[in-house]
View 1 (cartoon, rainbow, N blue to C red):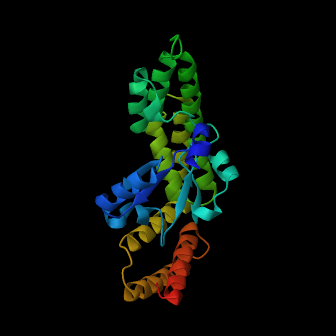
View 2 (cartoon, rainbow, N blue to C red):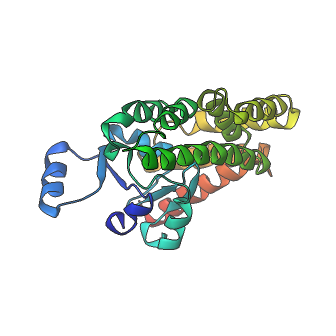
View 3 (cartoon, rainbow, N blue to C red):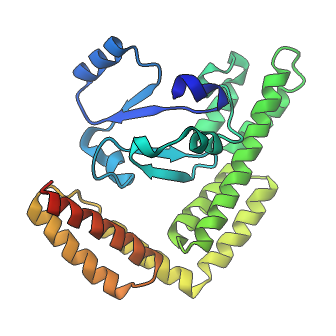
Length: 255
């Protein structure tokens, strides 16, 4: 999939919690042509809500997770949709003059990246690439704002707050910064949103530690069910329900 859709902006990153030795050996033997990273202790895996492997997470250009589940369920159309507006050249393959662009994007400073890209648009050698990069960065900012608004509408107030906060830094000086600030003020001033964010933070705290044994799983299910009763119908309640159902299913299978 990386070879087939990389030119459309797809970047595959495989993540493993296994040791370096056997992983590097496997990469060399298989001739893997995609990025890979190590997740010692499984912290990233837990952050993605992964309860079993293999598992894939598809993220669009705005940073929004558009799919999370079995890799076999991901289609080319899903990937192409997520890549809409993406830079077709990976950051690490951009020419040397784009070093500041790469650094700014890595830091999440999209306004700065846009400024650097626009400065290169008059360059005879890199102008065309710079225009594509600038357009892609604009798309990232617009997509991030749309994503944050969508999260708020869906009741994911904590996710929306974090996205708006990220945008305040990313889009500094851009029109989207003012929009993000306005939306954030509206969000944090809403009693419903405040209550929702508090519940979501409580749930995050409850599920921060990994479930290692059957006893842990049974205890977690009981805690989640009590939480669900208190937060029925809310976004946090729905999140808790999903987690409880996954744990119950794992207990049935004896995992």
